[in-house]
Length: 325
Image (cartoon, rainbow, N blue to C red):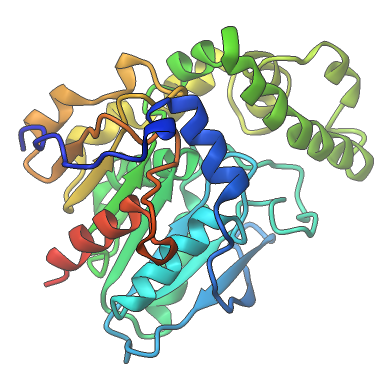
C-alpha cells in the first residue's frame, strides 16, 4: 500500500513545535474520564500482568481493543485512557495492559520489559479471546507500537485469526537510530526523564535479585545505549545494546504483517529518525498503511475543544472500525 496522503490535521500554533507538543500533551491534557477495572492474569513463565478493563455501554462484545503504552508509561496514563475512552464511545471494549514492573507492583521475575517483548501482548490477546471476543484490535504507542508491529510480523502464523486490524502511533521502528537521536541536544531532557524511572526499577530488581542484577553500573548509566548495554541486553538474552536494537526493532518485520495495520508517525516527532518512517515497507505491503501528518510531536496529536478527544484517537478508531469485518 503506498504511503497515505498527508492528513488534514493542524494543531493550534504553539503546538506546531514538536517538543512543545510532546510536553504539552503530557503535562496539560485533562485526565480522560474513565472507570478502569483491574484484573491480574498469570503468564506462562510464572509471572503476572496487570490489565485494566474499560467496558463500553454500547458493546455487547462487538470487539475489544488491547492498548499498549510506551516507555515508562502505564495503563493509567492519559494517552491510553484517552484511546480507551474513544474506542468505548465507538462500541468497543478496551483493555489497557501494563508492561512488567509498570503497574505499581513489582513482578516476580528478574526480567524487565523492553521494546522487543511480544509474548506478554500475545498472552493478553489470548486472554480476551478466551473471554469470548471474536474481534480484537491491538493499539500501541511508541515502545508499545514497536512491540505490536514486531508481534504481527515476526511470526504471522502465531497471530490469532480474531485479530482483525491494528494501529500503532509514534513508533521508534529503528531502535538504534532513535536511541542515538535522543542522546543529543534538547532530546537529552527526555532521556533524563525516562532514566529516572528506569534507574528506580533497576535498584528494586537488584534488591530482589542481588545475584542477577548489579545496580552499581547505574553510576555510569546516563544514556539509553548505556542502560540497554548494562541492563536490557543481559537481562533479556541479548549480547549487547547493538544486538538488542538489531533484533527488537520492528522495521525488519513490517513486510510480513498480514492484517490491516495503520502506522502514524508525525514529521516533527523529536524521537524519530528518517529510518523510523517505513516508506519502502508500506509501499511493498498492501496491508501496511503509513500516515505521516506534519505535526503531532511524540504521542501528541492534540485537538482544540472536541471534548478532550485527540486526533490520533479519532484516526485510530476510524481505521479499526473500517476493518472490523
